[in-house]
Length: 295
Image (tube, rainbow, N blue to C red; front, top):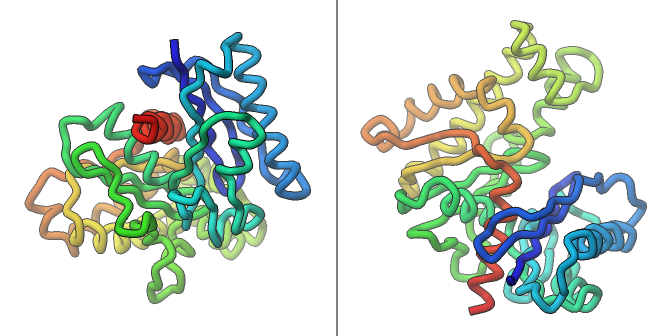
């Protein structure tokens, strides 16, 4: 039997997974926090240790591993295996991650934007009957991934869909459509630091300030999605990332704003739904990427 390894590196956490050749999960490491380590070398050592532990604990031979797929926030250079100047993972800027991990682990290693892999994994696990799938990751930043007929659309230079970095009237797009917005508005309205999870709990308890925060967030997200929907006309928008757990909190405001600006949404039955598998879809996408590169 052959296997795939996947690593999901986010803005604040990382973990690794081991999968069969049919993309079924065998083992998954616990998430670890980037802030637990003082520099890139320590983080990389911790990730390598996660991968090595999965291999040892699963009692498999390294020669049976087809390859390792790494998911990371962009922008990236997937062809060269380099993480570029990503604003949400500054400790890894200008890092030749594929060469380093291939050297350390002696395993063929491939890199792709986490949102692209999320969209690919969602297509494979949930939406293979649909042709155009938009994957949206809401977390430390804002990520977009697009699959067309089961293939990632990455553009002419491998850096398509970096819409979170685009300018809007409030500044960079993801400034108001990510966890940082929930945190900053909570501090303004409550006068103290609150996690998005706590604000979400307040929302479910009917707290007016929490409702205001998530309504604002939903409206900003609706504006952003209106641009993307009018441009690519997806059949499905699947939402992942940490904030997808609060989907119910911002769904109504988001949909109302989309309906204002998107003839396609009003005419067609575009699905907008939180992912069932969330980060696991990203790892499945990473495994598919490895398989495609191995052919």
